[in-house]
Image (cartoon, rainbow, N blue to C red):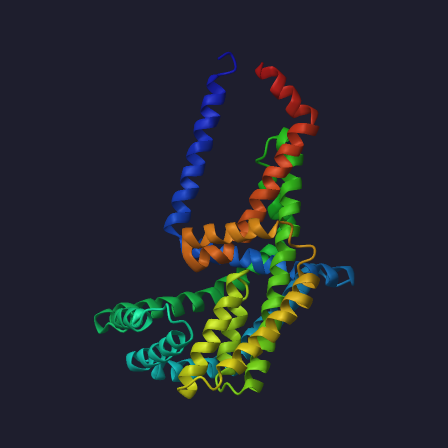
Length: 358
């Protein structure tokens, strides 16, 4: 009780008030917060390139401008050459993927399964798929779906404008921003906070760069192998498989299911199913045996069982988005806790604070 003073009470109330205001702002402007997070991720990915240009004698502002210009040009090229093909294929698949087609596919899959496994009851798949299809294709919800789609495209357009702009300043003034943030940290916590920031930034930067390279390579490999297998919409499926592959464990399953469904929709039978499964299997073998050991040897620092449960918790909390951010968030928390424990055990100033309490 002797340690409770008016100054400490006021400082505690101010800290709580500040945290509350930050939470309210983040809640009311969640889209802008998401854009800032994307800009930070982009700056983590591009920072080694900018640093390399700076070591070569290029001024940092010019290096940031050149690097972001290449990224913007790549986005423009992708959006004008790849996105239209992707959208066209997805529209074609959407037109073919009506209730009758889904029910027909479900009936064929069920017939094949019942023939192979007699314990499976008839109608288990067809009836459930029918209910789900009717819910998905409910015309009464069409306006809501369209409005949500418009909102998504509006956010994407805004992101293209905001994210590179914010990333420019994160890359250009990253060290200054860090210094300004660290100025509000008390001196006794300064070194610990600086260490945590440094470790988290390095780990997340390595992780996001590895995920980007892996997703790109899996997309190209899936596009190629599915095209060889005879799938007409191999580009759209390959892109979807590459994006899904960013989710550990569950991403490959999504890739298999998606390729099987699209192959049945295209042909109306099972003639391409085996070829598509083999194509995705080859991609996953390359990913598991070559890409992941090479790309994630330094960025992955958690047990596979822990990663599995973290992803499940993320899925239960926030669906697909939770699965995507589960590993970076868990990595940040893990590094922070580990460094705080180390600091309390090794820094004399923390030991003095503990002894004063007794």
